[in-house]
Structure formats: structure tokens, C-alpha cells
Amino acid sequence: MNGFCHIEIPCIDFEKIGKFYTDVFGWNVQVIPEMNYAMFQAPSGPGGGFSKQSKIAKEAGIVLYIEVEEIGAALKKIEKAGGKTIRAKIQISPEIGYMGIFADVEGNSIGLWSKQ
Image (cartoon, rainbow, N blue to C red):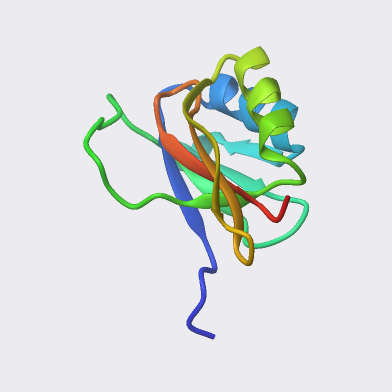
């Protein structure tokens, strides 16, 4: 209770964003044409959807973090799949771990977190 149960990421192109998150993180993406929406399920944690927009807002806002094994390797996969590194891997603290931020193929800023 009281935790995230559904995450929604804005997009312009379901195919493009679906391929990106499938290739990089192994998410299962299903487009639902009658709803003009796409759903995703991550291998662990809450699932969510992609909401179709006419444009993606570039202002700062809430940053969601995806847990990965190692941020440097994840950022390489992200760039290979068409995303961009916004903030390279930095240590938050020895106890908490590391973070990085990337822009997906639609320009959304998403965080990465890892213990190592």
C-alpha cells in the first residue's frame, strides 16, 4: 500500500519507445490501439503505460528511477538504442549506491539506480 503501482511515461511513437525499453531493459510492451495507449511490464517492480502525446514537455519534473545491475553498462545500452546520457554515473554515497540520468528516444528524462 501507498507505493507506486503504475507508472506512465509520455511518448509520441509507441513503436519507437516500445522498442527502446524492450531492447534496453527487457520490458514487455503491448500496444492497445482501441485505447490509444501502450502498457508495459518490467521484469520486476510495477508496470505502467505509455500515453500518446503530440509533444513531450522538456521542463523539469518528477524523475523516476529504474534499478539496473550497473549504470555504466546500462548507459552504453541506452546510447546504442538511441537514448542519450544526461548525467553519467555518480556515487550518491557508499551506503546508498549510484545514480545516472538518461533521455529516452522521446526525450523523457529517466533515472538509473544501482548498488554498484
